[in-house]
Image 1 (cartoon, rainbow, N blue to C red):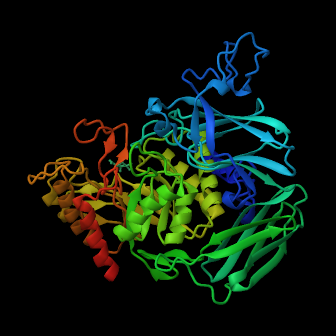
Image 2: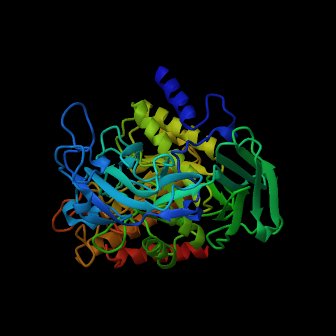
Image 3: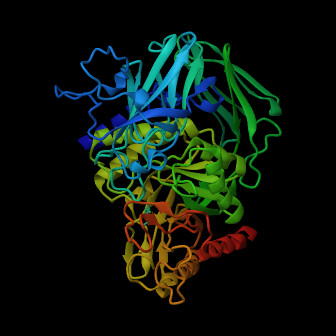
Length: 611
Ligand code: GCU
């Protein structure tokens, strides 16, 4: 009982509120949590060449009295205070940032240690107002320094964060040094054991953001189920109490004025504006929305829709919708693959899903993808499953691990809760059914609902109870989530022949919407075998045919997101002939070549879409 109390208390505190805080304040964000809509801010984009130094023994992290080299001091003048230098950024190689080091430097393909990055910034004058260093993502830990002074640390490889560097920056030469440590521990989120490659580094854009002394920090604008338009706007900086706050949607002739409360939060709750066109995959309508105070204004592109459940159905704008999905890792097409942080890479993947496969839904596995992915999903009309990488055997009994997961989830929700495409917040994937895991997810789900009660909570389950060919989804986690999702691999893992697959029956006692979040089989593109040996395209094609037969029989199924759009790199897939460190369950090859099974799913979706 003590443990559960501690978990619940921690969740509430970490969600930003103190115990008993009212809901609209339950997601108070610290300034280390990034701004909403960074791309719309007045900023210096620090993309481009950064010098980097690989630090295999992490000697740049000062520890105890052993001689350490304070790399982050970036001392390079000959008359330096130390007797001799064993590093020099000016003489070091450069790497194009953003981008994972695995793809940028072939000697780092599987390196998951510490690399120091340094950018020199010349300023004509110290910036006016407040200046923050905003990092889109750094996998896994970031140690941030400006002019030799540490400004902060961040843990978590897939969500943005920002540090106030106003007092560190000066006129003239400024040295920004970020140590990125890709090492994962057993108490990390995720642990070192994942079926995907650890891409290390500054994997998403880095900006220097300047804001006035009081600024618009975070906001959401959304439809509430009861046909209301709701908004919350949080100001940052001093003098926030009582500040006039405006919310405008010109295309709807909407201009609202309000004022912030003593903590700088303004809320609006009005009737839906006349003529508002709801967002949907068929009609992904976005509006220009401007949030402003005297001296600061931010414009965003926001779609308005509602999502909910009715018995076993998922409702979009009050109507049942069937999710024709596909799972996607955030990994570029082509070789060497890398993190898909840029618009072209993201659009290439989503285009295949939407326009070739005829999908209306993407499961962005197993971690928050780059913001550009969810913004493109808004624009193109794809529903999104967004997930925190609580993956497999996480340290569910460790309060520090929970704190990491809660903060990661908060950073993800603050970043993406204005994206109409995002309908699911998933707390994790394929986790063991233990008391600790249930308490851990209970805390995550409470914190997520406290921040955003307009989306559906889910998780990918896997250890279902089987009675012969009957599979019963009785995981206790099903009680806490809104949509029950299951990963299943009959016919691929184990020796059951494909002929048994259509006979499988599924029971979902929860009665909640049910979807298959994963099923799949491996195939090496171009390997053909009429005998349908595993890893042949013919096997994968036959697997999809029989699995879709099984799927079609599940009463009230709400959707599916088969595993997976594209082959992806994984340190666990070591079969030299068929895998060579690639998970081959993709429907397309690393280069984007469509395997035979791609067309099976595409045709099945075409038929479904006609219904
Ligand atoms: C699991 C897991 C995936 C993994 C897949 C596989 O379901 O969720 O991350 O890649 O199975 O075995 O290929």
